[in-house]
Length: 489
Image 1 (cartoon, helix red, strand yellow):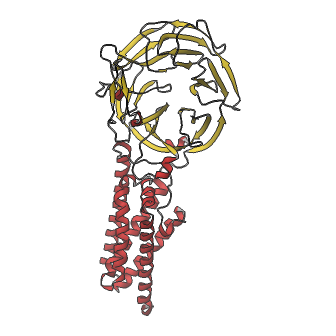
Image 2: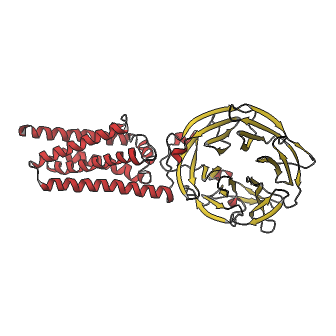
Image 3: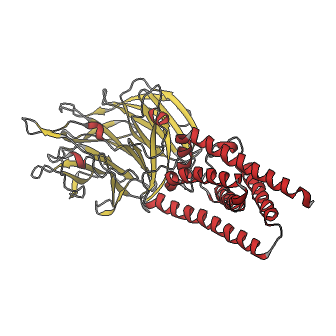
């Protein structure tokens, strides 16, 4: 067989040359997509920029080394090391990854990951055969070199994997990790108009309010999605209501209006409400309720003109317990502390997500700060343009500076719809979908992201999470997404 060695060795070198050149050219021809695919890798996301260039350069350089007899042995050792690295990467993807991403393109684009692994193992074997032929005799030194190269290749991939995981979780350089197959079901239901908002979920019923008809409630049965219209009856209707909001804290509901210092309380069985309080201090701009009949409001301090938080107990009568300035001092008018108040019923925690910066605050029900954390977005504070009119009112001239547009919380997980595109994200997809980032706010960890696709070119108006379901209102559509919580956890 020795007379066929040169032919076998040359054939193997040509196979590697074709493989590497074709793979490199394929990546270069669709380089942006290659970077996007690497950025979605669950193992190497943080290093997508560096690796995208390094892999292509390595493939071209190795192919050139294999073309010249003088450098062929070095090229074969490099081929062995690179194929070992690729093989270890695929092994980690199949066994230690949260999800299986798309392929990295090139000659193996149509292969599954298991076939991909087998293909790589075969080429590792071919490189060893070619090295043995080139060396003419098998010696201990040859095997030692192969072992050292193999260990270095495995070590590099494992270190990149561990470093990438750490940075993605706590020091993310704004690279999203999109979770595959997180949405395992989707249903759409047409609403009568586009003025609905979420009131809450209780007893397997979803309740929607109506901004244009503030005393009308839509009740949707979550078993069959049949709906019925309910009308709230109040015992006093001579208040100058402007922005009525309804909250459910089963078995009660509350009707409030931050521009009018009045609170109504009623029973969801009868939908009849009576005035609970006309506390003159109950002016506010945002509010959220807990399951223990506590109302958390964001209001403005009349002396400092800063946004502050307050907690009111609504049972049996209204009593203010806490007023706090944990939102921080506003340096660009009141808008840089503007945001979304949330309450996690399962964890009994209050959260505040800022609109114009990459921050959120977690507090207990007494509004004592537990943690202040940040999202993966890098916008520490959006450049806001604020003016003061003749009535001494502050106006925001660039409302499109919003960073965190929508947010919801459920059992320790915070879901944020960010308006900012991360690195290596597809522009075309971004135009027709909204990104939702998931955080374990108790561990201050970024878990991953997924897309909420537009409906008839309309973005999601708002969403809530309940029992593994995400309910979204998109114009006049109620869209229900069933989430795969195994992937999130």
